[in-house]
Image 1 (cartoon, rainbow, N blue to C red):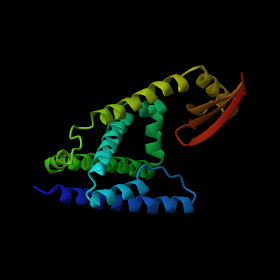
Image 2: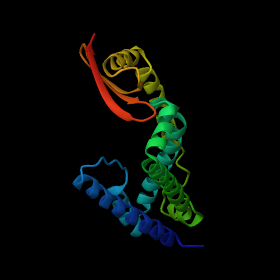
Image 3: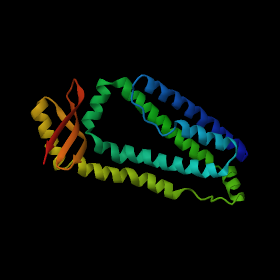
Image 4: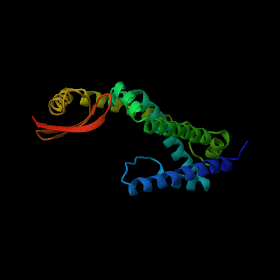
Length: 218
C-alpha cells in the first residue's frame, strides 16, 4: 500500500499538469479572442503544490471540492442541461458542429473521470489514517456531495420558471415577428431593468444556428 505522501504526490503531479495545460489553453483563448471557461487553471496548480508538500488541510479542501464538482457535474447533466434548451437543439448542434460537440463531450468525460480519480485517491486508507493521526476529520464530505447535487436541481427549477414563463413566450413572439417563422426559438436569458426587458434567444433550423436579441417595455 502506498504511503499517504506517495498518494498525495501522485495526485499533486496530475493536478499541476492539468492546471498548467489549462493555463496554457486560457492564454491561447485570450490571445485569439475565443471564449474560455474553467474552474481549474491556477487553482489546480496551487492545490497540487500544497498536496506535494503533504499538507493535510489541502486534502480536506481538495476532496470536498472534488465531491462538490463531481455531483454538481452529474446533476447538471441530468437536471440542468435539459432545461436550458430543447433536445432538438442539442441534436442539431451535434449535426452541424460535430467536431466541436464531440470535443466538448470528451473534455467533459475526462473532467468527470479526473474528479472521480482525485476524490478516490484522497479517500484511500493511508490518507484517511494520516488525517486521523493529525486530528483532521476523516468522514466522507457528505455536505459537499449534497450541495453539489442540490445546486443544479435548484438552478433547473429557477430556469424552468424564468425561461418557461410569460416573458419567454413574449420574447419568442417578438423574435418570430422580427426574424421569421423559418426558425425555431429557444430563450437563453431574460434581463429586467425597471419596465424594460431584453432577451437573448437561439434561432435555429436544419441548416443554421444563430443568436438573436429582442427587447420591449412592459
